[in-house]
Image (cartoon, rainbow, N blue to C red; front, top):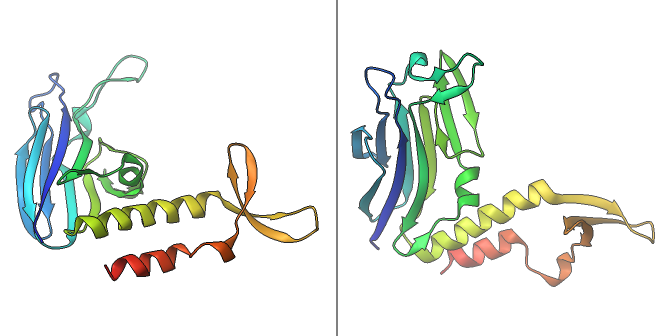
Length: 194
C-alpha cells in the first residue's frame, strides 16, 4: 500500500554568521529524501510503501551559530522546527510528535530530548511511520494512550478502603473500570489483525 508522506519544516536563520542557514538531512528508512541547507519553510513530499523510521537530522551547527545579547539571551539562532507531518489526509497529532525522541550531539555530549519540535542542537529526530494509514492511526492512538496511562494513572484508596486504579481528570480522581473495557493491548492486537 502506497501513501504520500508530507513533512513541513521551518528554518531559523541567523544572518549574523557566515553560513546563516541550518542544514538538514531527511531519511525514510535507508533512502535520503533531502540533504542540504533549509533556506525557507518547505514541505517535502515522499511516496512510501513500507513501514520504517522517518529521521530528521540537523547537522553542521557550531556554538558560534547562536547569537546572544549582553544578558546572555538568544537573539538569533540557526535551527529547524518541525511544523507538521501528514500521511495522505491524516495529520499526525502534535501530542504524538512531541513524544518522539530527539537524539542530540552537542560539544561531545549526547542527550535524548522529548517534548520538543525545535531542533536547535545537532541531532536526529526519529518517528516511526506505518505505510497502512488505518493501522497507523490506531498505532498513534495506542502510543498516545500508553503515554497518558503511564503519566496519569495512579493507585488510590477509595471510601471502602480498597486500592483502585484512577486517573486524574478535570481535577477529580476517576476510577478505572477494567472489567468493562478491553485493555489497550487487546485493542492494539485487534487492530493489527485488520
